[in-house]
Structures are given as C-alpha cells and as structure tokens.
Image (cartoon, rainbow, N blue to C red; front, top):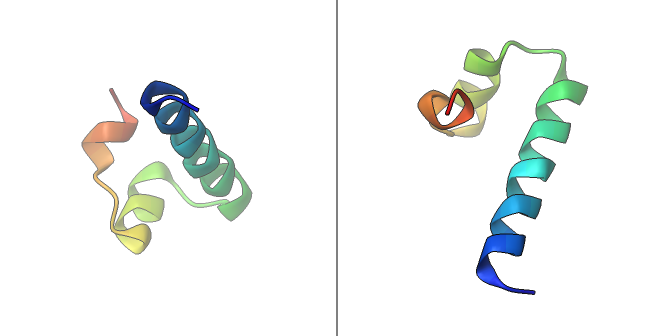
Length: 41
C-alpha cells in the first residue's frame, strides 16, 4: 500500500467513526484531538 492509499484509508476511517458518533464534526475533532480545519478542507 502506498502512502497516498494509506492516507485515504485513514481519513475514510475517521469519517466513518465521526458519522457513527452522532457528534458534530467540531465536537468529534475536539474529543479525538483532530484538527477541525482538516475536515473542512
């Protein structure tokens, strides 16, 4: 798996977890120590 594929999979995993959480994107990022700005890119 190349680096780009791994990165895409990592973000797909983050998005799946966010959707399952029922939280807003901002709340999910704050709880998971993620940068909110990266989600809105």
